[in-house]
Image (cartoon, rainbow, N blue to C red; front, top):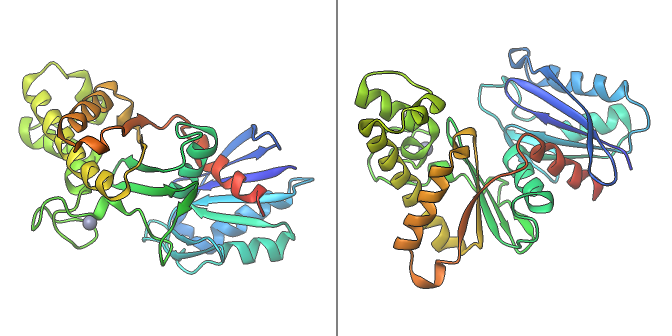
Length: 291
Ligand SMILES: [Zn+2]
């Protein structure tokens, strides 16, 4: 079976071929040109598919909230104008006649990690991605849990500080306002009066002022994770996002969780996502292979 797998993000559309052993080949990427709108993005995806021969299935991982049964975008922010309501599966299948699976990008990545990556062989885990915000996915009893309206796992907006910092969702005190990579960058800038990115912050790890901010930020990560652990009782928490590659973070988070969790929950381990950019495409390809 030959699958063409796409990963549609706000800045890039990445795609690759995927064989029956789930090897990705001929990885390519084009700019999303999000300002041209959701309709045009899907037209360009269709053009790419039509230029490839012998494709049996299409797998699509995409930004936005996705009704994965219908393969359409329920909601997308203005980062891709007009994307909300786009019937991706219907359009692609009508234009190409090739069965198509569509899933949200964080959920696709969770499936990629579940089948091929950090959570291989683990039947219940949660995924979190620490970036500008905090994305999440819930994988229970060997399948993705998507909730009543395909939106489960919005962990960035669980409230960890009632009445606290304002959040992009309109609420106050959300987890991502304190524990995202963006929050760390903001906290460092406030403390030392310099704008530094994540890499620069960790390069000055020995600066006690910066170290202090990092340690407080790790406490914020732990506060949110504790709630998730008590809700889901997962064996594993798969953490992604460039900043998580700093080993100090996962080491410290695991240490603090072990100190703070009730006995029966302490088996849980926080590990880094290992599939990187390929997780989304592989997850989408896997879903497509099951059509
Ligand atoms: Zn929020």
